Image (cartoon, rainbow, N blue to C red):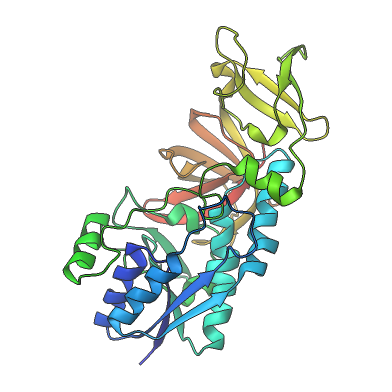
Length: 352
């Protein structure tokens, strides 16, 4: 019987996944990651989801392990988060964490404890391409909860040893399953924030980590004229209008940022639209490499509706995306994820 180590966050999804894995005949171990020790979290906002994860494991009679990866998490995910903001980009720590921590360091810990494979409560599916032998990442059945975007950096090796028990279910079905089994997490609220910024104040978090506030500097218009002073370089992202503190009509929006001078350039809403995007640092899933132009649907942020695009490889390994329709506020540091129907082709980091 295969030993499956299930990442248990303390929420309803991983709790329901444990039930499904047991029913499928696996020998299931619960594995909770302690990631936040030593981080300067707000007083009273330190999550204690490990207690719920342990309680569900005991209720189901599962062996349970709590592994402290807080130092690894800080050196990879948190440092990346701070570095990207200070460089003028807008990071996606959940995408980064999935590859390096949840399907990287967590697998190393699980393997040391005897795991044959890893499972999580993500809403996604894995299939095998019979023609090429490649592992494919496919959308979850629940389009509203589909998390394939966040999993776009998983490698072939990581996909080969992973199970997604919830891939064929909707969120209401998952809650119903947990309710039927009497799990304490059945109606637990989903987390909406970055786990290490539970109050949403990433500016304050970064200031506490670095020991200094974000540098201030000027707002400039498209002609380089100073419009005012901003309150901190990392506070602003492309497309932002609220919080600028400028009483100017028509409204102005953040267009781009210069980390060398800490200047922020502003313009009008129509200036935010583009059909041309360059992205690099690609992770290819459905193909081993992009060898020529292909037609795909693509999204440049998780919450965005996909749009038709042509993608073409460049000589330096980057990719040129040409969208059929203009896209608003495509943001450097976020991920462009390409789809062929239900299948993730690959994902890369937006540069322009």
